Amino acid sequence: MSVFVCTGAIALATVSPAFGQIMPEPLQPTIEPLQPAGMTIQPIVPQTSPVPDPATNANSGSSITPIQLTGQFTFTNALEYSHCLGDILRLYQAGTKFRLEERRSTCRDDIFQAYRNRPLPKEQALELIQMADFYATSLLSARFYPPAGQRQRVRQLFGFIYAIDAKK
Image (cartoon, rainbow, N blue to C red; front, side):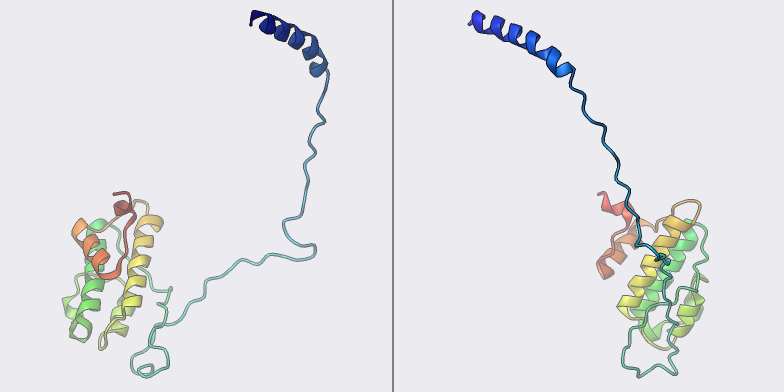
C-alpha cells in the first residue's frame, strides 16, 4: 500500500508543473441594455380613488372603493397611534352607531366623515390599518406599534399580523 502512495506523489509532482502553465482566458463581461433601444421606462404612479360620498354613492354597483391616499395620518407617537387605531376599530365594529364625538383621535377625519352614517366595510378597515402600520413603521423617524391588546384584536378581526408579532 505504501508503494501506491509514493507513486501517486511522484505522479503528481511530475504532472503539476504542466497544469501550472495553463492560463485560463479572462472572462469577458457581456453588456446588454436594460431596456429596449429607443424606449424609456416610465415610473409607476399609484392611482388614487376618491372616498365615496354616502349621499351620492349609496347605491352604486360596487360598494367597496379603495381608500383615498391623499388623506394623511397625523399621529407622531405610540399613544396617538393607539387612539387612531382604536377609533378605526370602533368605526368598523359600531357601524352606523358610531358617534364622531366619541373619537379619541383626529386621524383620517376624511374617512370618519365619509362613514359617519354607514358602516365601514371590512376591506376598507383593513386597508386603513395597513396604511397606518406603514405610516408608523416606515414614514416616521421612529417605529411605532399599537399595544399588544390592540394588535391581538386586529389579528382576530382581520387576520393582519404586525411585524413585531410575526417573529413570535
